[in-house]
Length: 298
Ligand code: GDP
Ligand code: ZN
Image 1: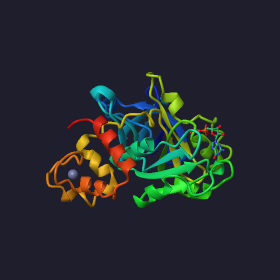
Image 2 (image 1 turned 90 degrees about the horizontal axis):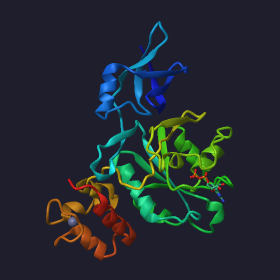
Image 3 (image 1 turned 45 degrees about the vertical axis):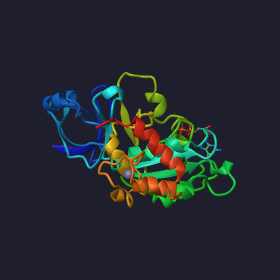
Image 4 (image 1 turned 180 degrees about the horizontal axis):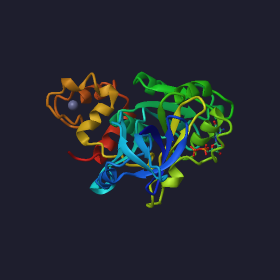
């Protein structure tokens, strides 16, 4: 049995990079196939054990336990779906200008990271078009998030971003046009991603095969390019888990009078008091309100 990692998947065929450096295509052993039908399928990022038959057929025999999994809840109660495994950080890319930086979207993606147990990092790109400190950087840093201002054009911040991406598996998300493909191309010349090549365009409006891939960087890191990563919903996050996705609530929420306080209207709510006192950023609280409405009951 050989071990390796799933680097790509499309229509039931898995591209696997073996530990030896060799790349093979494999299908799933029958038992795993049945599990795939019940939703727990093999996904990009999975570490797998592979058997190469003398007849040349290659099958995935086993999947190692996952450190993390990115789960996308289907709209309208569709069964949640694992879209990537073993991703350790979510690199959220926004442009400081063009497309307009929308805090609600960044907050939404921060929640996706928190809910899935990934380390969120905020990248503010296109700094070459901006004078002065980047917008929102102060806010997010105060919340404890790492913020990296970058420019794919003039090279600002690329060393820091590269350091980050060179270990483990990262997923890059953010609105189309923010510069995700450009940043990767700048970090690794020769990668030649088409500008605007990353994830969203592939995923949007298409309901056919969900495929995904890992982009290997020469320095050793892997970047997950998974369609649908940036789609609007908040992916099966339940209402009661939402509060722990807002780090600024952490020191307050035990002070609320009621257990299960939603922090939206209850008397004796410590979070609400802090908001009234101006200790919580009003736009963050608004994001919480919006996402709470959207999140699944349960
Ligand atoms: P993606 O959709 O997030 O992958 O974004 P792209 O990498 O396709 O970039 C979208 C557009 O923004 C392209 O026209 C890029 O040339 C441009 N762009 C990307 N990064 C920068 C940057 O740092 N500065 C400037 N001025 N333009 C950028
Ligand atoms: Zn409360």
